[in-house]
Image (cartoon, rainbow, N blue to C red; front, side, top):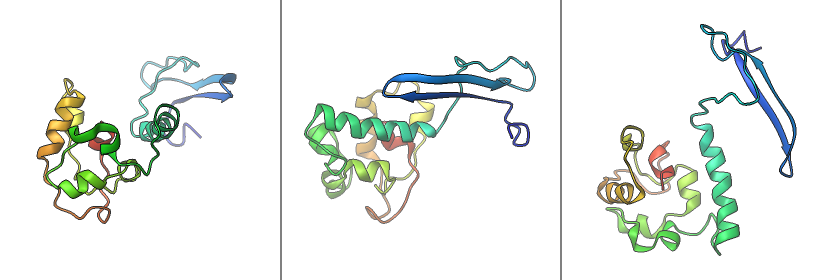
Amino acid sequence: RCHEDKNPGVSISLVKNGTVLFTAGYGVTDNERKNNVTSSTLFNIASITKNVASSLLVKLLAEKTNLTVDSTVRELLGDEFQLLDDVRAREMTFADVVGHRTGVPPNNIIRFDQTLTRKNLLQHLAKLKTPDQFRVKYYYNNLMYGL
């Protein structure tokens, strides 16, 4: 199937309760160099990281705080989290962030600014116009995952 979709290789691992049960690489890393994929080959997984980040968020909130995904971002970050729309800033939950329902439009600063810190990101968010209604407009948003 890898060849049909022009994906030259894949690496697979099965982990149960923190124990690696199986790991293997199949195919090649790219069609030009033809290096074999191994269990240690690194792949760019792009937006699949959002699933990982969301799962880790739920786990960390449960283990390290008394917060849940229905808690507001301000409950964790305090008044450091500001938006031009103060109601949105006060009421935005982690579920809103991971569900892309903040109404905060996409912004590529997180992709292009390699020196971005949480402080810079929060300053940028505080100035960003949010033209659409909160929890109404879906915006696929890398920026909010930067929090």
